[in-house]
Length: 529
Image 1 (cartoon, helix red, strand yellow):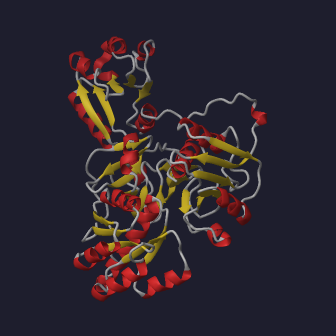
Image 2 (tube, one colour):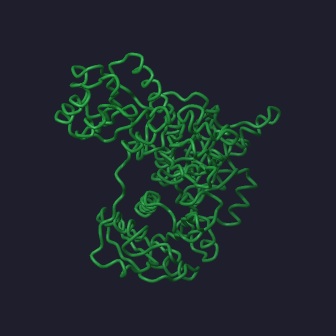
């Protein structure tokens, strides 16, 4: 962490101050806010802050005047300008007065976090030139605390809401990992969208989704030289990265611990299974007979029962029958032996899986991922035949605050009743927001953006463009080409850029889960306008 995590936000818009405070207080910063320029200047000159976030357009005193006065007493404190009206004269004046950076309103939590952490890192490096490069965070060598999972991805949260992230992936003996593609430090991640990618020796790929949104603070360079660590020690040396979370309160509820109930009468075998399950991020309760099992299966936190068939011998199938009666929703996984005498008897009852020595070949990872898999995202079936699906070039929405938002999409990205377009429309309708779709496949041009901006409060441009990242990743930019080309205020136009699918053509090839999370994040941007 930074040595002095104390920020001052000066902006006449209380909503901006609140947004900054919400983002950075979750990250361990002390955040002071002020909506009056003169009061903010008094605090800035009297206090000791790691950085100051300053609005450039305020009624009493603009940001340039503020900086002029501040530099008389505080020549070195890092200042980041916040503006909805970026201009060359203002930028030149701000730089002359020692502003370190600027960010365009409205900003996302990720863009804000990236800018401030970059600002503080540069300042820290400047103060420690003789000591060599200074990293923002220490390497996460020994993460502690509860593992929380979003499907196969996991995270552990530190006190300041930074998170160590990784994944549990199945790797067979015939399918060796060849390389792991890691995110870049400073890169923005979004929950459910790509975090990393694993390439196997047979040429196949597996994309690891991020369990939480945030900005990458550190990555596990060990995986570059030893990609097998991601599989041999996934919750230890195989961690992928450390993330400064940006939407912690909104997203953490989706991440769940993996509570496992283990039934095993053999103390030595139970200890062995306990150790292996714990190393995979599970929280384990052990029962050695039905008397101990009966109250445990009533605990709703237990979603799976792992039953060791060898230790229960012939009594195991009857035990499964009693469990099914007492707790029908509990998923039963039988840990069996090859050519077991009782396999047929177990299969006569309701079991989720019969696994032959799953800890030997690491099949247990695949079983756990299947047990705790979130329900697949669904889209209501259309009333018309699929052949009638039509391309969509725009989606208009009237938000609850009365603001009109227009989403303009590049050709081929949205269809009316399927894929990303269908998911976006469905989610907006589920929020009871009025939705208008524009059929067609027209290109997004400065003229179309300018036209939309003249009738709407906010325009969001959706593009698929190669940014060199993993397929399905999302970049949000408020200073893109359409702002400079149209002359429209950056506060009115934002660009969302999706990395194209594996074949490089639009969103083709992206899986249903990635499409669903893309839709969720796009709807969040629309609804927050």
